[in-house]
Image 1 (cartoon, each protein chain N blue to C red):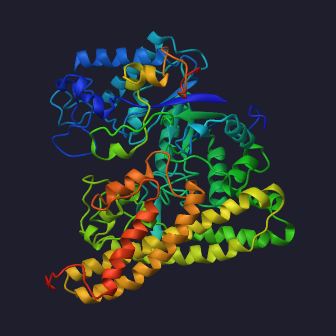
Image 2: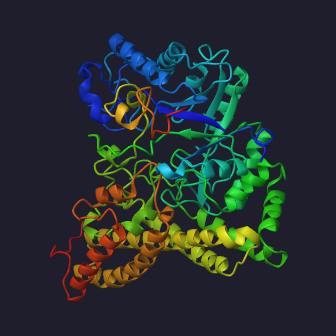
Image 3: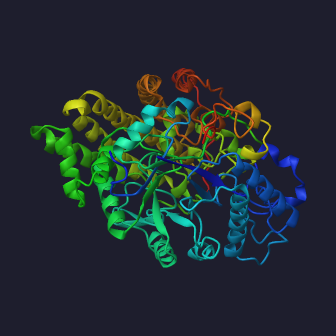
Length: 93
Length: 507
């Protein structure tokens, strides 16, 4: 579908499963075929879960935060940011 | 395709709180005094400076993104409330303004801003004055206001009002006043408005992928379009799956119809042969009837925000233990979605009514879908998946109904209306039926894990947190449930009861 001509100009998808292989060219093509114009990233499907110490948040997937992008100890290991290539959804963006 | 980054700020992941001065911590959040869940108090100048440094550094790492979706109230982020000695007396609008002022300064310092960069304030738990307060700082920046068109819609059940929807719903029709008010604010400022759309995992079936509901999807698309909305962002616990809802979206985006009935009729005509279209329309109507029986806007007097937390369909993964039922909403102590939290005297009668009707409707829908053949690619690849989704709804709804029934029995014992022996005699067939459905569901889930899960919360860990006294195998939680319930069933059949508590009568 030509997404410059769709009925709604702002249709932004969310990753339905928090798994790295979801972010494939085939998935993006499928979204475009439906008429989606964008994707937003909220949880990091590449990150291992981290328990934290605050009640139910230990059961969540890893919410991307400014802290993680800027300062977290796993910045280099996971390739988020300028330190490295890699396997983060943010890399190369 | 544009790429947006979603933010919940101001926040620090919980495991990093100790890396910052405790004095910078805010006072507020979802829990209770001493209000210690907030990462930053933006009345502390040093904290504001550190927050802006952090945000600037973070934005420098993602120079190519096309926009930021920014929420302030959920997922570990929240503003201070009046219990904060520094923020006391400061309006919510002012506090929201401070967060955005910091974020925008950081965006500019990092060089992220460009003329087509999109700023998406997400107004979840906001009031219109908080949105209006951002006008000056967003002047000259492309702004999309993200609101919720189903937040605040009312649900009725057998002629009585159940309450207002406090999260997202697919089965409720109409556009909420909340959305309309925010759209008016946005329009006055020259901003666009987008909805947060519950196509997948809405609160009626949070753990299930979607309900096939072509008419509800078509109605919402047409209404949003007629109101001049620019579109939507998928639900941030949801997303879209292959299925009829997505086909409706595809046809609407392609401009095939602007009226709901015409849109649905046209889509069904594309997916089903002429001789089958009436049967398909009937099957979807049954699924939509089942959707309407979910208590999405039911707010029982003795449960806090049941509407925003009711995820009882996950019971299919839970070992059934009457000992988990207290009759009280225990809030966040274990997990605020824990189904046992909803099993209260004020909730159970309505839940029994609604889930009984819901299970009946899903059984009828399941039978109606079984005979559909479809046409073309739809027939070969997507319809079989959609039939599995319908089957999953049926199994999960029956399981939820049994969990509620088990809870009703347990509280009846507490009231002195049921003996331990009578409870046991009711539990035996209930456990046998639950085990049969769990075995079927386990096979479905092992074949396709999309049938129960969520992109925000890890299912296996969630299940374990609901029943910390029963070991749950993260690779096969349904196997753990079956093993545990089989053992308990054997004990019950041997004539044992769960306990020796005598009957009390509080009257």
